[in-house]
Length: 113
Length: 362
Image: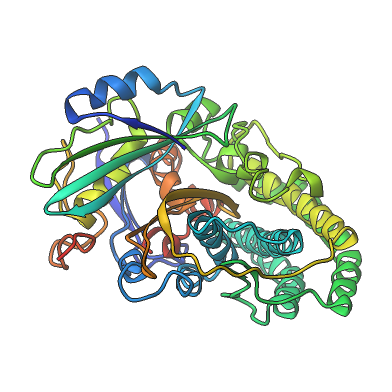
C-alpha cells in the first residue's frame, strides 16, 4: 500500500492532482481515532491498470477541525463523508449529520471514550 | 409547467426487501429527482469488533454482517487479519475459500434475478428461478454446514474440508442445473414481456459508472471492466482456476440480468476446476503473533468490491476495523440512475441494483 501523507490545507489540491477517473477507482474514506482527540483521516484509491496497488492519502488533525470535502473531485465521496460525520462525530465541509445514524441515536460511536 | 409529486418508497415496501428509503420527485410519472436514506439499522459491528471480540473471533462476527455474502466477509476479514499477523495459508485452504465464494455467488445472483423477475411482474419466473436456486443452498449446507452465515473462512485457513462425496455431488448437481440455467438465460434474454420492463430501463452509462466509482455487476453491465477477482492474484489465485471477466455495454436492467447469468457459468467452471485440481495439504495454519500495523484487503463479493481495513496494536483486540460493502459504493449511482425513468419502472430497477443494506449498515 502506497501511503501519501498530506494535510487539510493541501488535501483538495493533492487529490485533484492525483485522481484521474479513467485510471483510479476511489474505494472509500476512513477515520481512525488515535486518542487525545486526534483523528487520522484516510482516502483509499486503486488503479484500474495496476489494481493490486492501493494508494492511501492520509492526514491527521484534531477532531474539532473541519475536514475539507473532496466532493469537487470525486462526486461519490459524499456518502463515505456523510458516514464519517455520523460515526466519528466530526465536521466535514458541506456534509449534514443524520444520513447513517438517526439524529436521536448515540453520537460518534467510533470515537474512543 | 407540470406539477411535481414526491413519492416515498421504503423503508418498508413490497419491492424493497431492505430498509432503504427513496424519495422520488416525479413530473407526469417521470422521475426528475431522487433522494436516498440508509440510516435505519446501523448495528455498530465495526465498534463491536474493536472492543468486545478478540481478532480471531472477529471472523465469526463479520460473518453475521450479511446472510447472503457472509463467506465474502469472513474471507475478506481473514485475509486482512492474516496480513497483520504475516500468515501465509495453505493452498488447499485458498482453493476451498474460492469454491465457497463461487457457490455463494451462484445463489446470490439467482436470488437477485428472481427479485428482478418478481419486481417486473413475472411471478412464474420468480418462482422458477428460486426453485432452480435451491440446489446451490443445499450444496452450501453440504460444504459448510449452514445454508447461510457459514463460518467457513477463519483466520489461518478454513474450518472444514471438502468431502469426496460432497465434491461428487457438486459435479452431479451441476449436470442437472446447467440446462436449467440455459432455460433461464433464454427466458431472461428473449421473453417479450420481460424485455418491456427491463430493456432500456435504468440505464447507467460507462462514463457515469466511472464517475460514480460503481462496482460489481452494476459496473460491468455498463462496460466498466472492474472485478476484484481480476486484480488480487496475490491473495487468491483466481486466474489459475479459470476466472473470466463478464461485461456488457447496454447498462440497463436487462444487461445486469445477463451479466449475472453469464457469471454463473463462470462460477460453475471455476468450481469444477477447483474440484478437479484441489491441492493436497493442510486446511489451517496457526500463529501466536498478535496483529500489528495496518493492512487492507479487497474481495469480489456477489455485489462487487468488498473492502476491509484493519489496524492492530500488538494486542488481541483490533484498534480499528473498517468495512466498506459494495452496495455502499453503489448508492450514489443508484440515486442518479432513477432519473428520467418512469415511476412504474422503479421496482425492476431496484431489483437490478441488488442492494444489500445489511452489509451497508453493518
